[in-house]
Length: 289
Image (tube, rainbow, N blue to C red):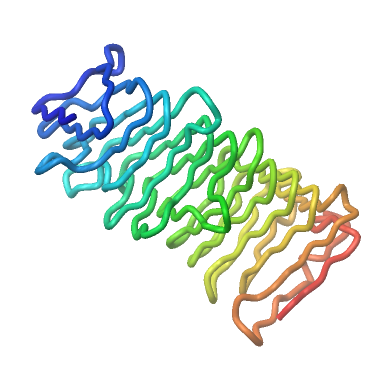
C-alpha cells in the first residue's frame, strides 16, 4: 500500500486505518503521517515513496502485529521531525529492522519505539535508530541473541519491562537519562563518552563500555546504578559524582569490576574508593587493565 501526500496522511486526532502487508507513506511538503495498521506490516520504500515527513512533522505508525522495517524512515535531508513506531497486543508483536542504509529517525527529532514484544535487529543491517532523544521501550527485550541494537542518540532511554535484556551499541557520545532498566542484563557500549544522568537498574548485571580514551561520568543522583548481579564499568577514565551517585551491586554484596579499554591505561582510584560517600558499594571492587 502506498500513501503519497503533499500535506499529510491523517492527523494525531484522526489516524488513517490500514490493513497492508507492505506500507510506504509520506508527506512531501507539510503535515505528518499518522497511521494505525490492523495487524503486522513491513515498512519499506515503494518506488519513489520513502516513509517520512518533510520538515518538522511527525511520522507515527502503530500496528496490532509485528512491525518489520526494511528501509530508512524519516531520515532524508529534509526530515527533522519526530519518529514514532508502536506495536500493541501480544508479546510476540516485535519491532524488528534490517536497513541496507540510512536510519530510523533523524538527528534533530526524537525517535520512540514502543514494542509489545521485543526490539530487534536482524541479519544484514547497516543502519541505526537515530534521534536527539532515542527511547526504546520494550516488554521482552532490546536486542536479543547476542545482537546489539545500534543507536545514534544524543540521549538514550532503553528498557525491558517483563523479561529480556537491554543490549545497545551506540555511535558516539551519549547521555543515559530517563527509564533505563532491564529484567535481565543491561549492557550499553558506546564508541564515545557515556554520561549517566539518570538511574540505571537491572535484575541481572549492568555493563557500561566507552570508546578508547573516553570517559564514563556519573552525575549526582542517588543510587545511580543498581544491579542484582555484578556491575562492570569499562572506560579509560572515570568521573564519579562526589556527592551522590552510589553504585550498588547486589545490595552491596556483589562485585563491581572496573576495566580500562586501552591496555596499559591506569585509572586513579583515590577519589573513587571513598567509603564516606560509598560511591562504589559492593563486597569486592576489582580493577582490570
